[in-house]
Length: 185
Image 1 (cartoon, rainbow, N blue to C red):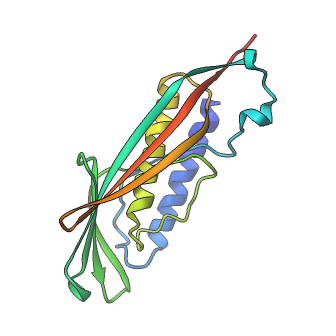
Image 2 (image 1 turned 135 degrees about the vertical axis):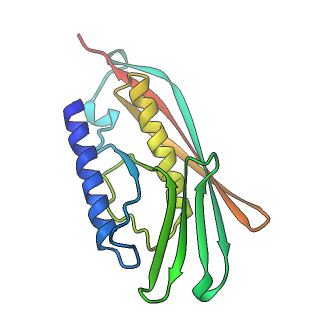
């Protein structure tokens, strides 16, 4: 199971790098450090036909991510900054009129989690703060599942709130799910 998970994560990271290198507007020598956790082909409890005595709900886990979005300048001087509230990472997209995309400066490690099939369509040429928020929250939930020794989750509840502090737009994503452990005989 762990070997398969490692293979999935390595494949996902490779796909992400290929997307990054083939995108317009991204410097070809630039690699943005990205950590990805993914659940491929998730199986629901309904699919397993489990009875109540064959699994245990360990606890309800709730995780949150807060992403800050800022825009400055206009036209050729337009810059978009997307950052994690606690400074885990930040991305600064500066419009590049020559390529039609963005040049990117970064710090930290961008973290994405996928609770369904890995989505290789992440495009650094289209800054989408809501996706960064959901991705980071899913990454944190997957890590919580692993650290608690759970086998999976019951369908997560996802909420996103959007607020504003001056010129900054704040995206707060919360994921809540019951952690499940399958009993073995």
